[in-house]
Length: 78
Image 1 (tube, one colour):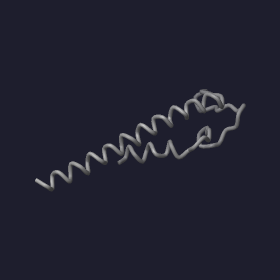
Image 2: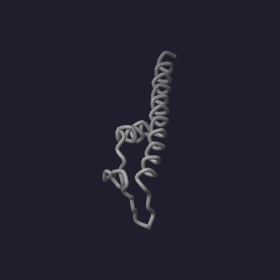
Image 3: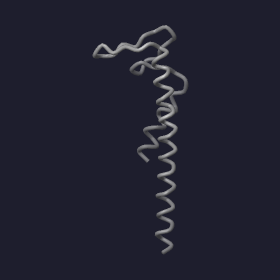
Image 4: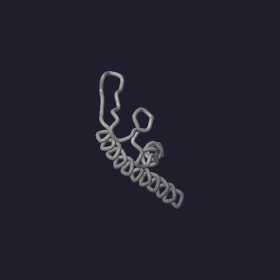
């Protein structure tokens, strides 16, 4: 269930591109502590990848819940 809720957050962000929680606009750069910087387009690509991982995580979390419930049902029938 933890996997489900952690990855669901990645899906709820929508198409917004953020830099440390602040919305970005095209042409802006995200500069993080340590000197790492990314353009709007790079951040958008990274967030799209995060969304894909989010879908996979939600799917695996849902599958885990289904297996857990099925296991409980079959155990009680024995």
